[in-house]
Image (cartoon, rainbow, N blue to C red; front, side, top):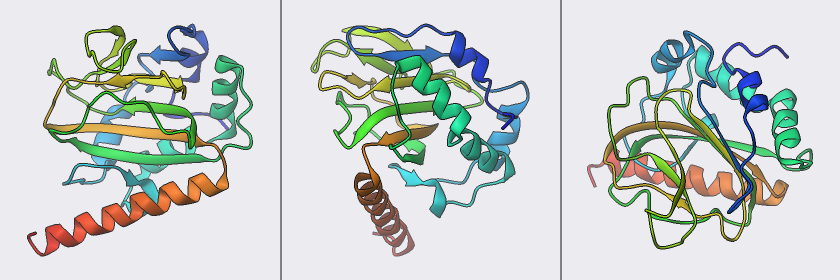
Length: 211
């Protein structure tokens, strides 16, 4: 398929960082003019946390973005970059709209995920905090290997490893990001989606009843 929103040549041209774990950082992943359409079509997410895209009202540009990032062409670009085979790893796409005080703590992704991706969708990002950092240490946010600005079109992809530490300094407010995880299999994919859907439903009920 021909990508209308994502510039895959930018991903293909960027070198892979191998230490302390494999990752790639790309700027300008969105084609010119795409962020304005995406900003218009991004769903209203009033709460923190992760929302599966299939339970959100997506406008045309957001639907196109999800289609492209789940495409076989995009998967092949990731496979070539990391030297992996991901055909048996179903993609799970989620969105965050806001960052909470508790978000950003240093962590590594779960073993249910083989590769993780974050694409930032903030049309304006004047903030100094809230930028994801790839880290060498599980307890030091200053052990930075790379810092990824949360501005529109910034992309980071990393292979999930036991020492794949990442986090960011506390930021509270709107912080739009699309996340894609290539899950280890159909079972982990289904389990994670169910968990996120239940959490989203619970947050909706709490908001509805003012809890």
